[in-house]
Amino acid sequence: MNSALSPLALRQKVRAGEHTGDTSGFAPGFVQCNIVILSADWANDFLRFCQLNPKPCPLIGAGEPGNPALPLLGDMDIRTDVPSYRVFRDGEMTEEIPDITNLWRDDLVTFALGCSFSFEEALLADGLEVRNVTAGVNVPMYRTNIDCTSAGPFVGKMVVSMRPFKAADAIRAVQICTRFPSVHGAPVHLGDPGLIGISDLALPDYGDAVSIEEGEMPVFWACGVTPQVALEAARPPFAITHSPGCMLVTDLRNSQLAVM
Image 1 (cartoon, rainbow, N blue to C red):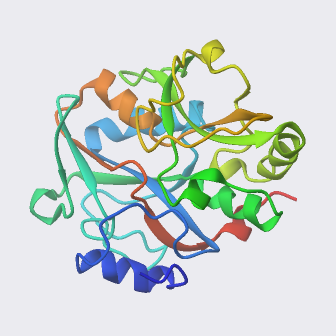
Image 2 (spheres, rainbow, N blue to C red):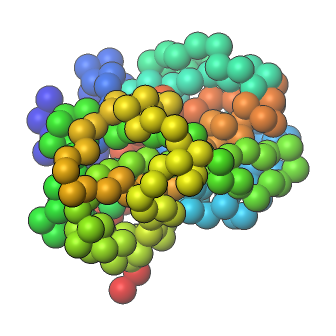
């Protein structure tokens, strides 16, 4: 697939089942979103969880109950336009599927959260290597011991994504990503992974491991998989998320999220 496809063309391929993998590097220049779908009676608590935890859960948009469209983010149907979905029942993931049309209900509310793939483009534009992009794999993601602020039944530890950099490049990465608070902003930790509860970088909880070369340090960003951990704790009767790395690609430009 051509990574230079427009967001609409990519969503059409996803809808047709012609793209089922991760979306890193696709539709350059455009915002990609993590997705959480909950029944309306759980939506207010989850909205509060996002407001209290803006780094792992930066809210980009939300839908109306029962409406699969997100018109402010593009011409899309949330039931078909994500490459892979995870279905949760009572907090347990029960299936991973490419289409949720048959599961859609009139009380479901969609939340679209900012994704690190957006700031990866800014790093690349500044000449920094992003290892998972170079390797053509999904970014490694890890559960940590960092507590999120709870909201109603939604509690849990933060999930982070990791990219290795030399010290000078890590400083530059912090400077660049600080301009993008809507897509996780600056890193939450640099260096020793043990200090945030990660025992082995070669064994990510989600995504794929990447190499760390001599003279490089791991740099960790808050990650939009965090809501999936909160769902496991809250145990709503029914919920749907994207599969890690398989994002909703929107028509919103990354440049629109930059803070000068």
